[in-house]
Image (cartoon, rainbow, N blue to C red; front, side):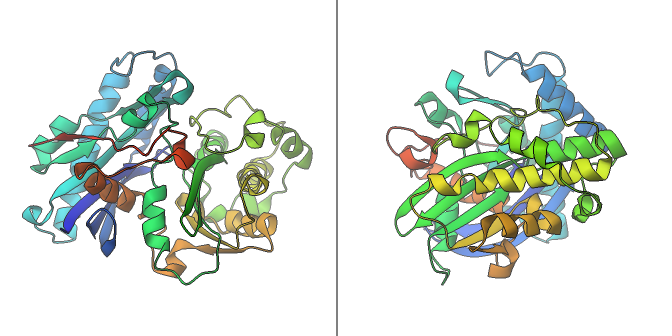
Length: 366
C-alpha cells in the first residue's frame, strides 16, 4: 500500500529545515513530490551552536542542560513552521499527508557510548501539525550496538535501482558531515567519511561573518595548505574500515595555521574532498560512479576537487539524475518513516555495524 509522507531534515550544517514529499510503500519510490526550505536565522543558528557546546557533557539522552531546552523548543517551532509553509506554498492538503518523518537536530552522537541525541519534541510537533510523526529513528540501532548512522543508505538503494549507471555506484551526501552509500548489485555498504561542510562553515562564519562559503567563491580565491592537509589526513578515523560514524565536532580540535580566509576555506574544502577519497581503498571495488548530494553539491569548487581526487571515476550531482541534491535527505526521512511504520529494516550490519537488520523509530500521534 502506497503512503504519502513528508520528510523533515535539519542537518549538522545548521542551515535550516528541509521538507520534501515522497510517495512510497517503504520499498519502492513511486513519486518524488515538491520540496521546501525554512532557513534558520542567525540567532537560531547561534542558539544551536551553543546547544552543541552544552550537549558535549551529556550522559543521559533525555537531559536538557544549559540552552538545550530552549533550543529544543526552537527546533520544534521551526519544524512546525516548515511544515505549515510547505503545505501553504505547495498547495498540498493536510489530509493528503499520511505521516511525517522527523529527524530532529543532532546535538551529540557518540555511538561508542551508546549515546545519540536529537532534540525536537515530536509529540508537540504532531499536535501542532495534526499529522502522525515518526521520530527517534537512530536510537534503536545505537542501543543494539550499531553506529546509528548513516540512516539513508536503504533510500539511496531504492533510488539507484532505477539508474542505468555502471557500478559500483556511490551516493555521497555532504552535509555537516560527509557520508557514503556504496551500492554494487545487492551489496550495500555505508559510513561517514569525515568532515562535510561543518568545519568549513564554522571557519567562514568566524573569519568573514558569512554563514557559509556561497558557491565556493572564497575557496576559489585561495590555495590549500598541503602540509596541514597531509597531517590532518593521518587521523586514525580515516584508516578505519566501514561501518563508522562521526559526531559533528569530532575534528573541531584540528586548528589551522595562520591563513587568510580564502586559503583557509580552500584548505578545509580540500580536506573534505580528500577525506572522502580516503574511503576508496577500503571498499570492495573502486567505485565507477559517484553521485553527490547535500549542501556540498552546491559548491562547484568542492565538486571539482572531488573530481580531481576521485578520478578516473565519474562524479555527477544528484540533480543530473532527476534527484534533488537539496531535498534528498528530507525525502529519505519520509521513506524511513514509512519503513519504520511497517516494521521494515532501517539499518544493516554493513551500514551501521548492527548485528542484524533492525527497524526503529517511535510514532507520535496528534
